[in-house]
Image (cartoon, rainbow, N blue to C red):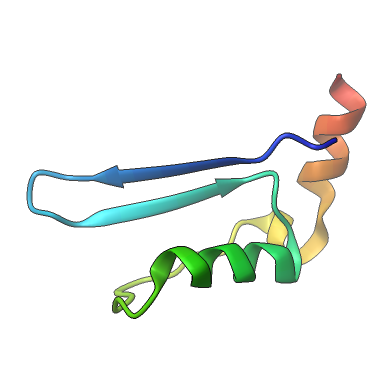
Length: 63
């Protein structure tokens, strides 16, 4: 089974970032929305894996 990692960082001003590793496409969106809840998003950047899923495949082949 593919390992998935969720990293939440909160800085000294209370701003938070959410980094999802091992997710791709709609699965990534679903997890993001679940964590976000009703909070406002200031900026959103999608990693290349969101569009291609290649990162997930690369990690599998490296193991």
